[in-house]
Each structure stands twice: as C-alpha cells, then as structure tokens.
Amino acid sequence: METTSILFVCMGNICRSPTAEGVFRALAAQAGMAERLHIDSAGTHAYHVGSKPDPRSTEYAARRGIDLSSQRARQVVPADFVHFDRIYAMDKDNLERLRVACPAEHRHKLGLFMQFAQHSDAEVVPDPYYGGAQGFDLVLDYIEDASSGLLAELAA
Image 1 (cartoon, one colour):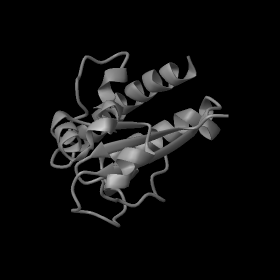
Image 2: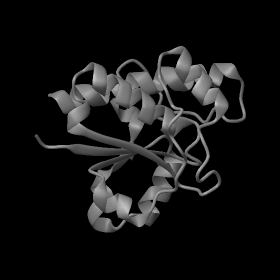
Image 3: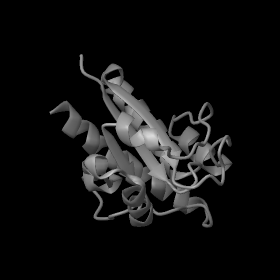
Image 4: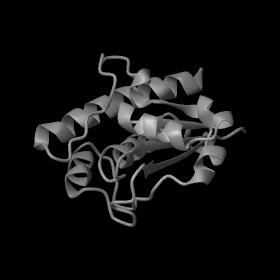
C-alpha cells in the first residue's frame, strides 16, 4: 500500500495548520484511509516551536470531536520539501514563503489548502489568532470542507 505524505502549513503552527492536521487525520480515520497517509503540520516562522496549539484552537476543535493535545509546533525545515508529497499552505503569504524556501524541483508539491473546498469560495483559511471565537469556528468550517475535498481526491 502506497503512502501519501501531506504537510499543512501556516505561520506559527499553533492555530490553522495544527487544526488542519487534526481534522484531516480524524476524517482520514473515519474514511478508513489513515494507514495510507502520513499527516503533519508546521509553520513558516519559529515563533512557537515546541508549543501546544493555541488553547482556543484546541477548545473549538474538541467541541467537534478533534483532539489536538498531542501536537507541538515546529518550523518547516528543508527536508520537508523532499519528504512530503504534498505541502498545503493556509494562505497566500505562507505559500509564497514556502515557494521562496523550496528547491525548484519540489515546487510542484506546493499549493493552497482551500483549493479542495467544495462548499466555500474562500481562497484561504483566515488567521483567527487576533479575532474572536467566531474566527475559530470559521477556520474549522473551512478546514473540514477542504479536508473532505482532499480526501475525495485521494480516494479517487
């Protein structure tokens, strides 16, 4: 059985990308695809390396049955561009940072995660860090949508 490795990336790896990792991992397990996937997350910046996800991300994910408690923030490293088959940024700024850091032969692996959304026209997952509770719910809505679309593509 061939394994596909997927890396989700945001700025600090404490809100959006760990949420994407947790949601995608849970949906993959529900779909019986977990054994076919290696799923991880990272940040383009080293602000929070070693930290748990933002408590608000953890709380709002838990309300939907998603456990983020075992995750710890890390920064994208050069080996990620080689190791991962697909690398999805949460927004255009982080995608551009990945493009700058990524060797040319691996740039085909990069993309925006929201390209897989089936019910939203949003191009990016907005950063909820400085906003209120509704931002964390919106992030979960977008991530669940894009995760379902990505799983459907992988299953096809």
